[in-house]
Image 1 (cartoon, rainbow, N blue to C red):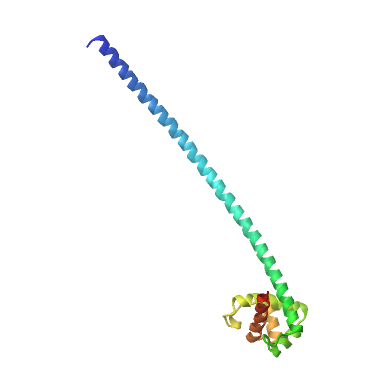
Image 2: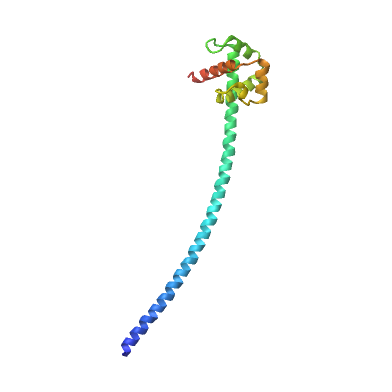
Length: 165
C-alpha cells in the first residue's frame, strides 16, 4: 500500500471512530434530555390533575350552593302561590277540601308544604308511604290529613301558575 492510500484509510477510520463516538455522545445526551422531559411532564401532569380536582371540588360546592339557593327561592315562591290559592282558590284546579286544608295552614306550614311539594313532584309516581319525606313534611301531612289527591291538586295549581305568561 502506498502512502496516499494509508493516509486516506487512516483518515476514514479516524472519521468513523470520531463519528461513532460523536453519535454515541449525542444519542446519550438526547436520552438524558428525553428522560428529564418525561420526568418534568409527569410532574406537571400530576400537578395539573391535582389542580383540576381542586377546581372541580370548588365548582361542585359552588354549584350545590347555587342549587340550594334556587331551591329555597322556588320553595318561597311556591309557598306564596299556595298562600294566594288558599285565600282565592280557583275551583277549576283545587277541590273544596284541599282548599280548606290550605286555609288552615300557618306561614311556616306553607313553607314546609312548598318544600315537600318540590320533593314530592320528583317522586309523585310513588306511593306516599314509600317516599322518605322530611320529618316536618310528614308530620304536616299526618296532622292536616293531607292526601295524595290534595298534594296532586296543589302541584297542579303550582304548575298552572308557572305556565301563565
